[in-house]
Structure formats: C-alpha cells, structure tokens
Length: 132
Image (cartoon, rainbow, N blue to C red; front, side, top):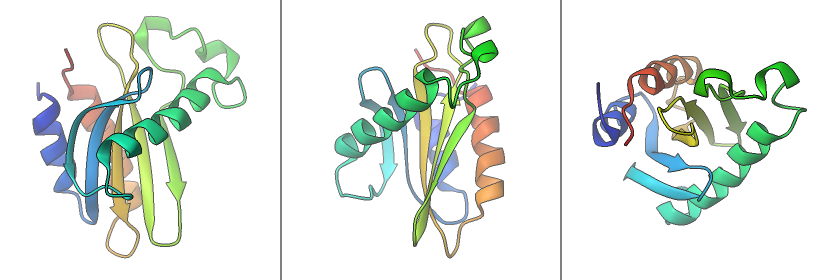
C-alpha cells in the first residue's frame, strides 16, 4: 500500500501531469505536494481546492441524500473535474480509516493530458493510498 509520496510520484507519471497534491479538505492543508502549482503556491492552491471539495461533499445538490451519511467512511462524491482553457483539475476523494476528509488533486495539461485515463488512475490510487 503506497503512502502519500509514492502516490504523488505515481500521479506525476500520468501524461500531461503538471502537479499533484494530497489535501485535507477540513483544514485546507496540503499533506504532500509534487510538481508545479497553478498559482505558484501549493498551500494556497490546497486551501482553494479544499473549499470546492467541501462544498461538493456537504451540499445535497452534489451529494445525494442516500450517500450523504458517509456510510462506511465512503465520501458521497467520487471526484470533481474542473476544466479551463488549458488544463484540468481532478479532485478525487479518498476513503480513510478515520474521517475521509482527504482528496487527491491532479493538475493536468489539457493539450497533452488524458482526462479519462487520469480519472481512472486517480481512482485506483485513491483505493490504495494509505494516509495516517
């Protein structure tokens, strides 16, 4: 089972990967980062991404009522995908043994990245990631 550093290095091997981080969305703190950050500051990016993750996980419009109880520690949202002119941001929620308030954030170049592949691989990484 890979830890944070191994998971981040694996994420950076994806085609088009510009940067990656593991973030606690409760506090907005980056638990680990690698590569570049869209605004040059990994901590600011982590805090901003955490706001999006928190909104999606806590609001019924995005987290259906039957999944909102976090049954079995499973977050009610699998992932978020933000698309802009030149890149994608993929936020993948991670199931943990404690409170499941962690997500993987991958910043992916649009011209050389593969969004479908990145989403599949982040899901696999999230299943194997050991946090704690």
